[in-house]
Image (tube, rainbow over all chains, first blue to last red; front, side, top):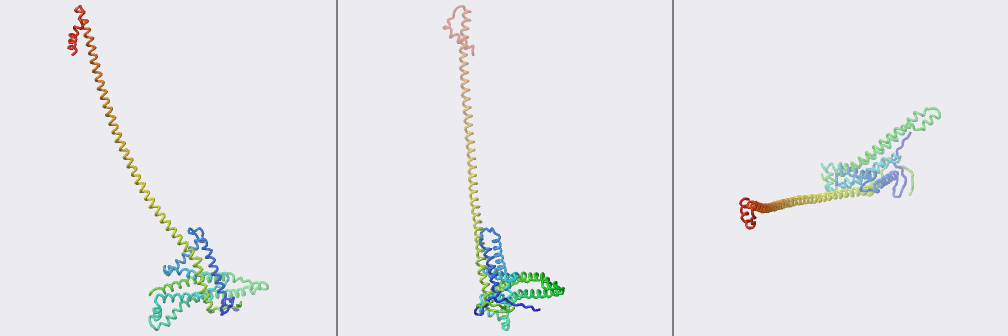
Length: 247
Length: 169
């Protein structure tokens, strides 16, 4: 028995080698869903709220503001929409696999893109805070020999972030596929020996595959997906906030 | 543009896909800003302003009420003062009037007493005169009977009167 785990399906090929895959399409679907929810939540707001919708909307905004300012400080309030977008996109992309969609976060390109954004902002704030010379000098500390290590360390941050999220979500897919395949084999072994038509039916009916994959999906998609989105946001905030602090 | 079936490798790197992931994230930032954060923050600010206005209105109303309370207390004090004054002056007037009435009454009583005294004196004098006349007539009658002849009452009247005068004292 062969098990194949592949990446996203290519749906469209455009000139210049641009391809549109399930990753992009599913991400757009998620974005559209988030946009629709936001518009639905915030239409017809009142100074004196009368709807539960508005209370939920205000709760989300306040929670996001509190999440960012408690980790980064009050002067980073303008950063709230970025973290909110990052968290909602990462979490709902991972959760989209519950609907049988290909989760965009199990594509390394997606998580790499977001990690590169974090890296750009970290470097920008390091240079802005210490000046270009101070930033360059910081790479040679504590002694000059350490410079290559320090440069490597700078790139290790986004790399580890990208692979952490990708690995968690993609491994969920892999483990699910493996377990599913193993259960299919076990199913055949258990019911395949039955004589005649019963044996054929036993092989075809996925009886053993009923329970366990659902529980695994609950862990990998719901818990792990949301947790990784949270960790990604947390690391982004902490790295950027510490990059903007004077040493 | 070719529609193509096929799959990426499990681990593949594509610069366009990385750029699209970044672009999608930034677009979602703008969407969230426009459709979630702006409207909610606007409404929160409006609510804050309304609450601030309510508080300042309440403070204003309270200070106005306090000022009016002061005013009414002062008016109440004034009214009390005036009532006191009224009662006091009324009392004084009543006292004065009663004193006047009493003194009037006293004077009147005095006058009437004096009047009565004079009347009594007059009556006594009149009675005394009548009695004197009657006595003198009676004395003359007696004397006529005793003497047997008529006494000229006119000639002797002076004499008799003197006698009675001396008797009456």
